[in-house]
Amino acid sequence: MPEPVSPAPVPADLSAIPPGIAMRVRDVATCLIGDDGDSVDVALYRLERLLHDDEPWLGAAPALAELGWWMLDAARPTRVRVQGCAWLSMFPSVETVQRLAAIALDANEPTALRDQAAWTLGYRQAQAMHPSVRWTEEAIAAADDALLALVQGFTAAGANPLEQLAVALRHVQRPEIIDALVRAPGLWGEALECFATPTAARALWTDLDRVGGAHRLRVVRLVAHALGAEAAPLLHARAETVSLDERLELRQLAVAVGGEAWLGALETELAPLKYVDMGRARARWHLEHPGVVPTTRGLAVARVTATMPAEERAARCAIAADDLGALTRFERHAEAYLYALWAEMVRGAGDPARATALVTAHPESAARVRDLYLDDLAARGRARQVAAAAQGLEGADRGALGLAIHGRPLAALELAATTRLHTAEIVVARALACYRAGRPELMDRILAEDLPPAELVDDVEVPAFPGPHERWLAEHAPDARPAVTALVRGPDAVRALARAAPADAEPDRPTLAPLDAVVRRLGRGLKGATVYLAGEFGQIVDRAVVTKAIAAAGARLVSGPFPDTDYYVHGDYCLVQTIAQLERQGTRRLRTGELEGIP
Image (cartoon, rainbow, N blue to C red; front, side, top):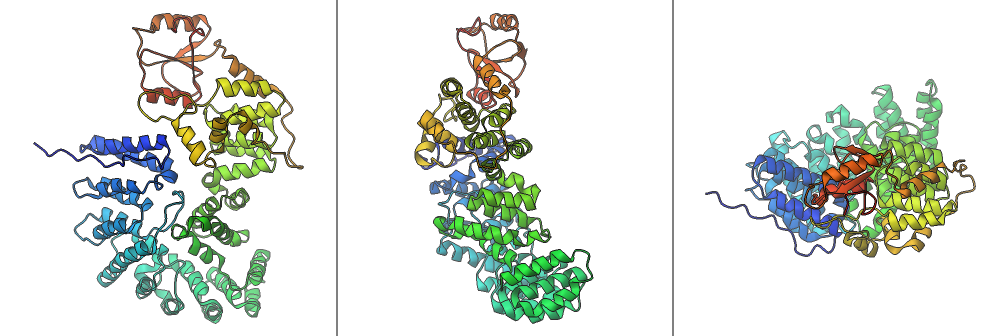
């Protein structure tokens, strides 16, 4: 008989993370035990969803590193081990680094596994991780030892088989590693981005033609950043021998690090061009910020946010966001990943105004900074822009909440009516909007009768709001979801969210129809509504009686828990996950007395 699979370890005490997330962690760990293909597929899907939805919390429980170490075990399928490497990016301890290094340096391990291990060893960004996640100096040193060994070995072999290693090395500042990369710029051009000593930069400039064309612009910026004024004559000399686009960049960089003395050469290049004003404007920016290569300087922060004390990150991210956006006033970034890192710096700064600056320069980034962007539009009274952006970004609840907070209650209710998601944000938006529109009695009814579903904390029932998850958030992280905190604390806390509309805000909607929609929802009428029968019927609730009553009330029966369903009837038994899904999408339970056949 095959040996039983050891259970995935989950700490008994997960009080450092919200209860609903702790339940999902335990669910994933239980699912990972299976060793057949189907169960592994399900487990990895759940693990992916857990990371996508809850990464900001998981790092708060360092003991969860044990789950990652378990996934790394050679007895696990390779794809589970690969995900174990990714999981451990949230737990960068010395022990984690040692385990990953052993895999990355073992030529007998699968290439995909070594690749992910190398990525985690290099990755030093905080991004969405919990603020407590931080690389220590000891962990960095141990990781850099392994990365240096990889670089030296692959350089000697003349090939790098690990696809993610080069980009992982962009996060590394250790001089010995930079020197090793510079000695083989043709092999490691992709790894050179924002860190280099002056000595390495000089050597790199000498061998610049060995750097692949796709990486040359980034490397030229790096040399200018590392050498400062010393680079200006080098840039000027090279400009005589290259194509126009590269020549213009070299001339601009010479002005950036060398100052006004190099302006004449740039003007000679710009004068015949059609869009000369943009080039001159960029040159003026460089003269106003002498010695700064902003994109490279911003990247040098973006790559290492997880090495900084948590209390310093927001301020550093704000400066880096400005650096990464500085030159986009004059031209688009040639490499799309710069916008992604700019967005991460905006999120790290937590600054709505900087989010709008990013979206203005690069509308495609709106989804990355959605909540901050909608908050800024609402705070500036741009009700129509909020509505349009919220619809396109699937953020009607956040947009409606922003409008309600900033004094546009009817616009808030109109936007709220476009979503069936029944989140804490949409409930607070409706309640506060009704209060500010002169209907405080509707606010009271919403807070008494139409609260959102609580987060599941077990497989037994959907708890009444506020459940353990919501109470935990209100007590331990009140700023994480202000709407949840306000609902937990009560009507006074909801009213306290209100802010005055700005003087130049757009006028509110000129109709009371959005209030009528709230009245209809609270009235719980069945005529024309859709109803779903949830679960198994027969012993307590008679399906035939309920079905007949639904038709008599003028409602329509639907065959599944679809979005936009108005009501559901709970049968004798129904999976708690199904009930949670129904209530999250705004489907309300029909209660005793509202329909014949419901006991």
